[in-house]
Amino acid sequence: MQTLAVEAPAKLNLGLEIAGVRSDGFHELRSIFSTVSLSDSLTVSIEYGVSGINLRCSGIPSPEGKSNLVWMAAEAFLEAAGISKNTAATISLHKNIPSPGGLGGGSSDAAAVLLTLGKLTTIKLDLASLAERLGSDIPFFLLQTETAYATGRGDILKPVKLPGFHCVLVHSGDNIPTPFAYKLWDDNAGGLTEACPRSNYTARKFGAWHEGKPFPVKLDNQFLPLLRRRYRGIDHAAEELSRLTVNWGLSGSGPVLYALFRSGEEAKNAKEHLAGKFPWVLRCQSR
Ligand code: C5P
Image 1: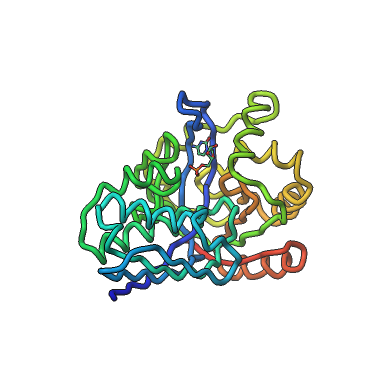
Image 2: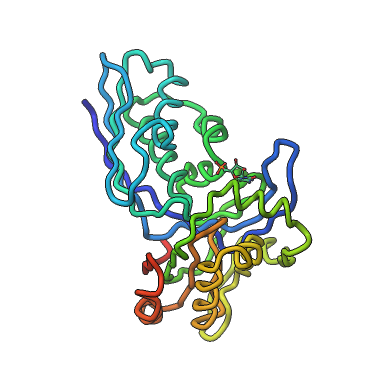
């Protein structure tokens, strides 16, 4: 049996603009993805001469069967590689990233499984095409880059340079499945959403973040006004974060919101202020 241990990072969406609905039903996005120091931990093993997928989960509860993206990724890899009949994959997943969270946790886990099975088997597959079938955020995590400007479904990616940041993440306590958030946008598009400035995304390098200035990427997220109206927890978290700093936003389609700070000290103070007001508050930083 061969085993590898790997970390699967969370991402934040630093701004998110929905440009419209595509003919395949997915939405055309513009966003900057940035990984942070929060991650899930995985160990992936393969054994030849036997078959099947075994998944054990710990940490934040997540499904241990076929409905887990990790399972789907392992199955997709073994089948595409033509080795599913004589190779077993055993995966231990320790979840620290809430899901659904808007932090790409499940997608990051799936990307980590695809990359690790590639290493263990030394079989080279077109992982991007496997990822396309599994989830829109997986291509970003396959890149293994810290920051990227994403368009398309979130799968067309260009590396960008951003200043580093400290951050506090807040789970609003709401359960917001991603398809539901997109449906909400479909049902309300144009009426409730606010325009996001686009010029912000044309740069590839965002320079420094100076004392007393806003973070150089606009953090508007077009899901936010819709979700604030529907979920009291989101509205409460938005209210609290906006009192602390102008540099705050919603990640993906939520329910995790974040505030960015230039120093660890400011982030520490913010975390102390928010702790106890929300079910999950975490301090971390850009990678
Ligand atoms: O691809 P992923 O599994 O993350 O997407 C979950 C759901 O979110 C999709 O089934 C779709 O309803 C919606 N989605 C979308 N446009 C995107 C990403 C996700 O409509 N760019």
